[in-house]
Image (tube, rainbow, N blue to C red):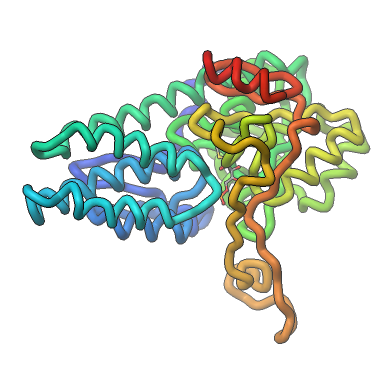
Length: 348
Ligand code: MRU
């Protein structure tokens, strides 16, 4: 089957002058779209994870700037440029780790700097371009990553790096979809991904939508899965990659990479260059979001831990570059990443 058969899901849409987001907090039980015409509401939606996943956050923020420009130009065609600064600030404060957010805001800001008349048409064209580029990057990375996978095998993925997290077929799930269509992947194991359960709720849902065989595991089962030789590759996305190839991704990714190396399982990171932060030398400098304790202390809204206990809830971790076998971007493949190889890849 062609990849088109596996490219059916979208989570971010510009429609009739407004932004539409599939509310990912409600999946897989409810497919509910929310419409936004206000930039601050978009910032809140990113913070509250109506939309999540690094590229999807960047695309959403770009459309958020369009909404801000609409509002601010209407408010004052004279002072809109200074008024919109507050919207940029609020969008930038929504989540700290995924660099795609800041990359998209910077891109919109650079364009905006050269505009004095009504900016909405130009900004909307730029946001749509960011969106379209991500769709194209997903497909290209999917092909590059799938080429690396040798033969029919099962793979393990973590969190959700799929259509819900991007503009197109996904990063890690883009590779998996294309490799499945080519007969190179025959089964997907998905980590449930405590505490927000992106694996159980979102990745499993995406695979079921596409009729790709999927088995859900608790994170604690991953090492045993690898030891029993059940997977040949771990394929994940990223929220920010440092200049030396260190990879920030959903908490638990570092454990998977350590376990993969120990068991001779290959570890692939798939991310567009909008996720690569060449201003950060190594992973130690990547800001790691800490989310509310309640996400760990409760499950589906029900408290599971005794009163009086505290929780620590870092949302991301950093996998050192030396545990990464390959980084796949739309500009090419970097095996055993180093500072020099990353710089060469970024030059394209
Ligand atoms: O907290 P989330 O759900 O936004 O975290 C998402 C991830 O960690 C993804 O793996 C990453 O953004 C890559 S998405 C293509």
